[in-house]
Length: 235
Image (tube, rainbow, N blue to C red; front, side):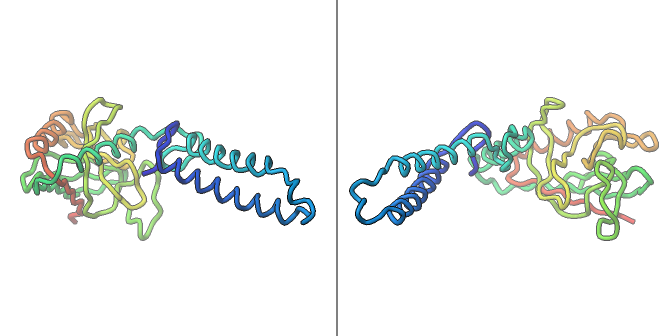
């Protein structure tokens, strides 16, 4: 596991040690071969020790100021950090073989948004609103204005600091990251995420909080080992 920004792990230390040893060997060989045989007893080993120490320190400093995504001088992505923490906790809790299946059937495809129905384990719960659906095999993705591809995705529960509550995030969505299931009013409230609520007004959702509460409370009562969401276009 990669260390986070401004933190180091044992793995960083051991890798730094390997780098230092490798540098010591290289600089030592260079020093030996660049010194006349008659002067071996007078070799100054200080530059070798100095380059070894600098190599170790440089490696450790690089890792210290690199986040877990490999970005230098970038703090941790709070969303990714929360996701990793949740995945770690899920592993510690063990498996209870309960799976919650969520189905999103997209039924209305408009110029700027997409309407669907959301089912929890076969029971319709609410409606959904997403960005415009685009067939990404035929047209380019428009950032912040494109619904995710059809597919079956594993989900995790994460705490979203923006609204101070737990929501669902979809994992490994092609060409997308940070896709959530959360509340919202219209397409201006999503950048690829799945909004939940009730489509009582054309092009809009109402009572989003109520819909999200039903979904998250249901999942909490099930305490599942796995959450799977299937997104389908029903034409």
